[in-house]
Image 1 (cartoon, rainbow, N blue to C red):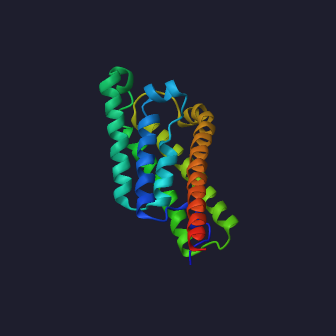
Image 2 (tube, rainbow, N blue to C red):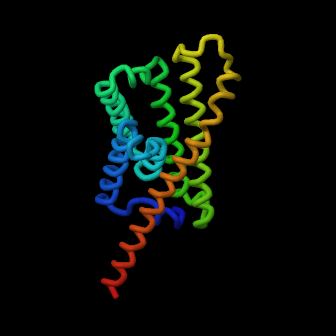
Image 3 (cartoon, helix red, strand yellow):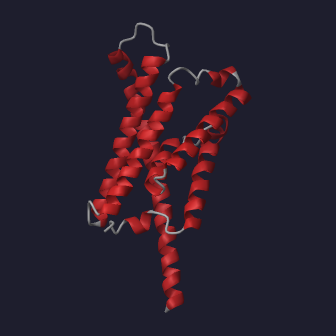
Length: 205
């Protein structure tokens, strides 16, 4: 038995699912390349996109497609901006993709737990999703920064402790943007599902 919250925060038709996947991809296109996102004052949606994709779709093919899209956007930014963006590609770049996979995995585990009825109330389901998102963000932050420190070759004699001290201040920004976008996505879908169900009941009355 799945959690009652799941009917509100997951797509309930193939058409809705396709539309959501398109919206996730478009949000990455609009915000990942900083030439556009800076002009619009938008934070990158990528972290929320991978978490929501894991929660909503769970198929590995979706993860692979979104990872490919992220790489293509990054390569496109290098073509457009040249050396200004080329520094993003270092031996540590696969760590970024691994961090996205961790976010997707956190969303997928949350969705599977809701399917199984691991928690039986809407509140419990909401707390489960929130906890999974927070764990995914922290894990992704640790993976992306840890691999960048270890593999990028840019830090010379800096110790891991010094690097951690310098980067921890950025965690709050990643948390706030990923949580905000995730809440917007979940809230928007919940409102859509509620309106759709209300109209269905009105037609049947």
